[in-house]
Length: 396
Ligand SMILES: Cc1ncc(COP(=O)(O)O)c(C=O)c1O
Image (cartoon, rainbow, N blue to C red):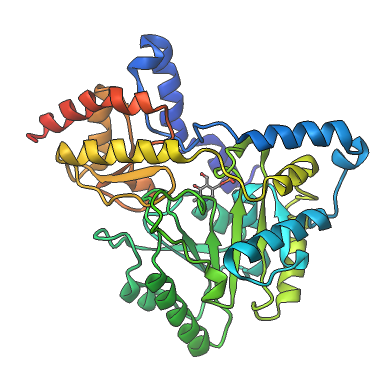
């Protein structure tokens, strides 16, 4: 007899993975350039040059026993200090190494943070459209995920629905900005209002409600005017979950961190609980070599101008064809309204044109589809006739 939940997770592939696998098969049948695979969020641009330099230099000049050995469970102290100082210089915060806990990417950051704060059956709130793994992560840590329906006009937060949803069992709220799948960045007004509501509700229910800021796309913004507010400055009980998967194009290396600021109530114990959650989940330490690598590239990103070019090409092309979408400020996704109510049926029709799009249903936002534009720019250029033919099928 096996646990039903893990067995179910292991035997059903996510819709995105399913489509990605279909794309690989289809490419083998008809050729790579004939299939327009917009299914998955795998960075399409290489890691920056500093990464290779850092790896080579570390391998050449540092002690191999140290580089490939265990670090402290919470991560190397100098690496954590470098990251804290970097955040302070960019955001005007006052973190030290003791506020940082190194992790194996955002997935680990989220699972550890949830495990650290959730009691059994407590509730975690998030906002549609949302990263579908949040449900897996919250339930995996004994919690329950509640999804606030999307405000599809702006993809900011529907505060009335949030206020109505928070209750005496709510322990955490997850936000993700820049957002997967909408590409929208939460404005400063949105974050301020969110903080106001969470403060009022914490008081009303006399309990901590943690704001978990999932930020793997923080640096991926495309217009100089776009500011991604640093959430710890607006709400005290904030825990930041970060990953280098997207900013440095390193998803396979599994490296990121958690920030537990001093402003969190009882922060030393929350940090200790994060350490304990890492232990309970079997994350002894994040990969040591890559802790040192990211510390050396702390202020760098991959060349994100490619994503900006892709965003502009896709957004302008699709809106000209009559598709309705909110212009993405960041991440590398565009969320467009399907041309019929049933997004699944729309994706099936798109498939006939070799366009692989992900239905919004899995993101808690029916009627929409996600297009990942972390692809070669030619893929977008070459896909435009297919998007046109698809739109024509719907009389556009
Ligand atoms: C919103 C969001 N959170 C978390 C993750 C997980 O990131 P990581 O690969 O660093 O675990 C992803 C990955 O695509 C994501 O889109």
